[in-house]
Length: 120
Image 1 (cartoon, rainbow, N blue to C red):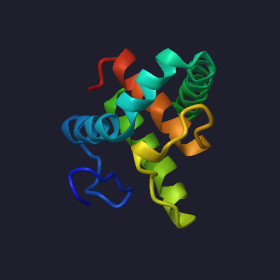
Image 2 (image 1 turned 30 degrees about the vertical axis):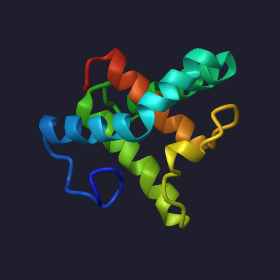
Image 3 (image 1 turned 90 degrees about the vertical axis):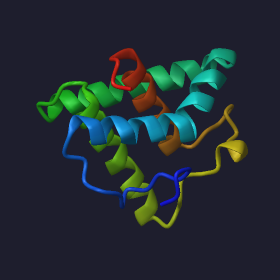
């Protein structure tokens, strides 16, 4: 993994610091661009909000709260499924923010929650 690429196959997320580092990398790679795009595209903002709600519900169903380790672990599991299907995270310059794929929306939602809950 280069400094610009996220992968599910990184060092274990066992500490708050490692989780924050992973979330920082996620934010740098896709979150900033996705959140900026959502400010310009109301439909994207609504989609990100819906995905953020689904992430909150998923964490709550697992008995977890929104905190760095739970968000980073969740994002990593989403990315792992994406990679198992042979698809790396798309280059942010090639994302059509008017119609991003599900994985992109879910990861941007994780970034939104990380920002909202001071996990970065």
